[in-house]
Image 1: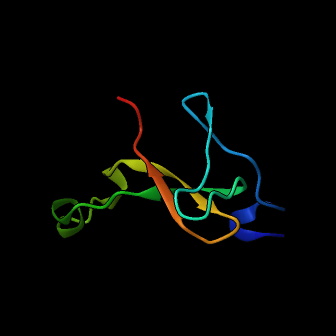
Image 2: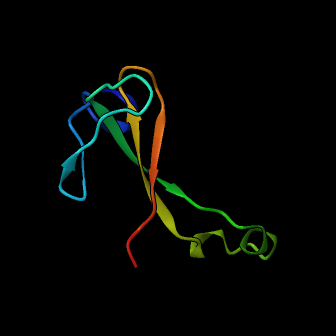
Length: 71
């Protein structure tokens, strides 16, 4: 099993367009979700209420591309 539960890095599309790494121009990514913690929520132990971003990790160089959820 590969990184983040995927067997291998795959193509990624954001807003209908194919994603290319900003650093190395790689075209294969690992997808994962990351919680966007805030100080106030953490202080009151409400981290579960924070928003989650979609992250694509470049399979070639490891650079992480973050995308906020649409409102």
